[in-house]
Length: 440
Ligand code: KG4
Ligand code: ZN
Image (cartoon, rainbow, N blue to C red; front, side, top):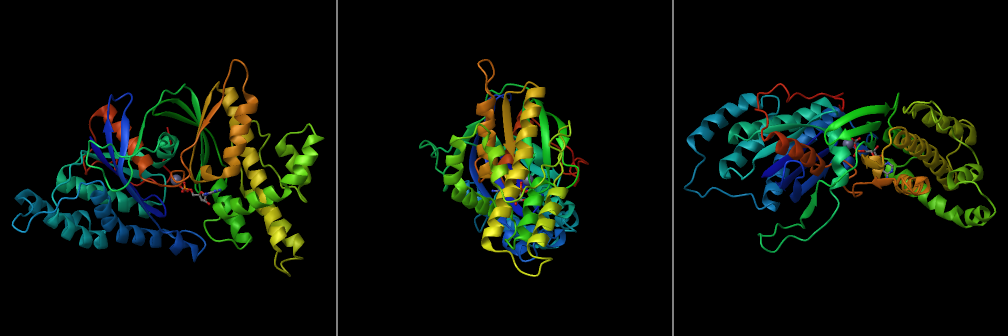
């Protein structure tokens, strides 16, 4: 079967077409095409995402991106000049205006496209319905409903966070097979693997910081979450304090990584004479120490708002109440200590959860999963915690697929569709945007 996946929960308009084969319990996926239209440049000017502006961008971009995605998957077939959409489609197109009454711009782009292309060979459409920004979620949902209505294609509502949990599956990059007509871009092929349950998933993004107990494929229980800011949000806010562009995570990370390398030489020498772990050592070498909030709270919750405020106070102290700007060295030192603090809490609490629930496998997802220090520290912790009888494994998505994309929505929606062999109709109440949708 072929599945179109749609993601518009925040500031990326993302579409993908996946081919799914094999038994429902162990489907195999090929990505025929995938595209992400990022709004980062637009939102960077304002230092954050404005929902109304993001909604307008999604509405403007989604139809051309759909045409591109269809074409790259070799599924775009034009009607000849003599051919016309069939009668039923004409009737439906006249009613589309009502369905898309809140999406005028999308409607005006969609009708001409639908009038010149044949129904593509797509068996189901997966769409993110939450969590996220409700105005932007509605763009994706209404687009999916319109296609479903016109072409009679079933819909699969997807929880964005389940997409992040499963994004680690999209790993192996293979060339397109020669038997089939090769799509323009390389096909990414992967399958549902054997996984030992329970597993733990660490979800770290701009909106979420969660530890999830994965009892089985599709069975989740959130066992810990942030009580205030998400870790990605803290990265972004601290970046703003350091005058770094939005989104700040990658910039803080690059600065911290540079600073870490610069101190590597001294650190290596000192480590020779020290029995403490790398993290403990870095703590001692910092000029200043930031708090590790809730590290010993006894539960699996997080708090990142205090850490951000501690950075703010430190900057005020350094600059005498903002009487001068920070030097590059000061910025690097802050980035390093902030990253160390933020990641140390994530790593230690996640490992505690792994031990408590007897999990061997850790699945990491969300934008902050692209962070090198998080990747290195989790891998190191797993290795250090291994015993003769228990091996800990950590699995990450590729860096590209750590941030929002539609492949992960296709994996979650595709797995669900394969299981049930049916979706929902465009009129279903399940197709309602839910900003705070929980994972359960
Ligand atoms: O999952 P995502 O693309 O969108 C949400 O669903 O929130 O995550 C975006 C977040 C942003 O806060 C961004 O700063 C952060 O992920 N991020 C990073 C890195 N790359 C992206 N944070 C730390 N280090 C990175 N390398
Ligand atoms: Zn996300």
